[in-house]
Picture (tube, rainbow, N blue to C red):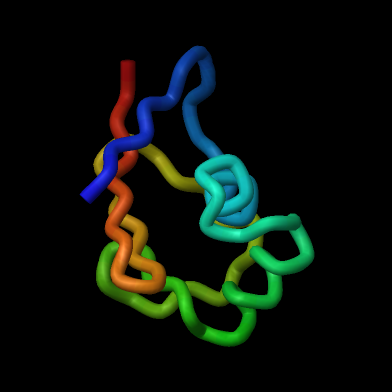
Length: 71
């Protein structure tokens, strides 16, 4: 399990998070993984590429779990 801390922003978009953490090499790859149903947010399959993630949200992808934390 990893924690991602939002610094100076109220949220991060799902596709941006995946690219930033290296879960996808490009934004296009992140979008494809999301729209293919391979990503879960808070236990539910998420198909929105730009889903806003806030502190307390949990992302699951390829046996990785990321918890979003606030400052």
